[in-house]
Length: 465
Image (tube, rainbow, N blue to C red; front, side, top):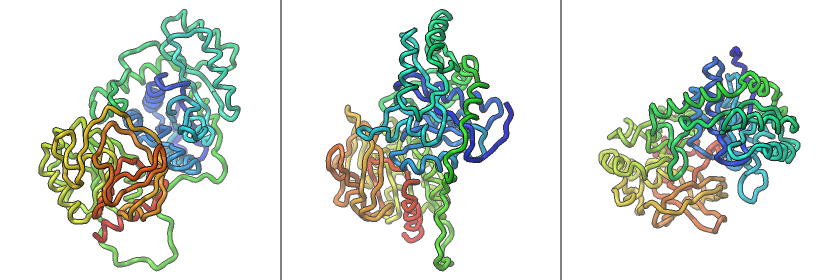
C-alpha cells in the first residue's frame, strides 16, 4: 500500500457496522484505522451519531481529529460536505457506525442510522458479527442484513469472537452460500477491551498510556486477523459522492456589504479541555476561529487561571461528576470563571459545563454562576431533541430552531432559570437551561455546523462585551 494523499469526492471509504451494539465495531474500526495508519496511509476517522468518546480513540489511532457524521443534528444534506471536510488530504476514510446497522433516531425511520450514512456517502459496509454463540445461523443473519435494503451494499463480513479453527471453518462454510466475502476473523482477545463507565467507554484523555496500549492491541488484532488489502480494495471501489457535493467550510459566506475596518484584534475564546471536559466537536473550534476568534484551550483540573485576556468561554461536555473534588479544589479558577460570567462576557456551557457553573455538584462547591445545584442520578437521560431558543442569548436569538442530543445521569435543580435556554416538545413539553447575562447553559449538546450563525454571534459578543 502506498500513500497518494488525494482529496476529492472519490476518497476511498468504508463503513464499519454491526447487527447490534456490543458486536465489536469500535475494536474493528479503531484497529483498522491504526493498522492502515501504520502502513503509511493518511486515514480520516469518522463516527456515526453524536458520540464523543469513540472519536477520541479514532484520533489516537490516526493522529487526526475524529469527526462525527450525524444526520439528525446536522441534516442529511451536511453529511457529505462534513465528510469531505474531514477527509481532505487523506488516502482513505473509515466510518464507525452506531448501534445496529439500521437503528436510527427513535420513531424517525432510517434517520441518523448507519445505513442512512452509508447510502448518503455511497460507501460499502463491512458488517462486524459477534459469532461467539452461533455457527450456521450466521448465514441467515448476514443474508437478512444484506437483503433488507438494496441501497445498502454489504461488501464483506468480519467475524468477531471466534472460538477456534473448527468454529471458523463452520462459519466460513455457512457464509459461502450467502455471497458476502469474509474479510476477517478475530479471536476472543480480552486485552483489546476498553473499560466502561456510566456513560460508555472511559475517554482516551483519562487513560493515558493504557489507551495507547489498547489501540495498539486493536491494531495488532486487526492486522493479524483481517485482509487489509481486500478492505482497502473495497474502499477504493466506493466511487464518487453524488455530483455537486463539496467539502464543508467553517468560513462564513461572504457578504456584499462594506467591509468593516473598525474591528479590534481577535477576541480570545477559551475552551475547557483536559480529562474532565473531553466532549467537543472539532468543527466548533474551527467555526470560532473562522469567525475571527483566537481559540485557546485550558484544563480546569490543572490551570488556576483562565488564559490571559479571555473574552469568551466555552465549557463543553465530559465527566465533571468523576472529578468533582478536583474541580472544587481549584478555587482560584472557579472564582475566575465566576468573575468572567459576572462581567457579562459570553459563556457557552453544555451538559458538563452546566454542572460546572452550578453552586454545587454532589455537595462539592462549583463556580456558583447559576443559582442551581447538581447531583448524580440513577436515571439515564438519553435521546435526540428538537429544540427552539426561548431567550435571546450569546448563541442565538429567540425562535432559533436547533436539533440536539441529551446524554447524562445527573439532575440540575431547578432545571431552568427565569430566562430558559431551550424549549422542547418531546419526550415531553418543557423548558430547560439558563440564560443569564452572557451565559447560555444547558444540558443540550448541539452541533454548530448546522447553524454557523451560533459561532459568529458568540464571537461578535466577545468583541463587544
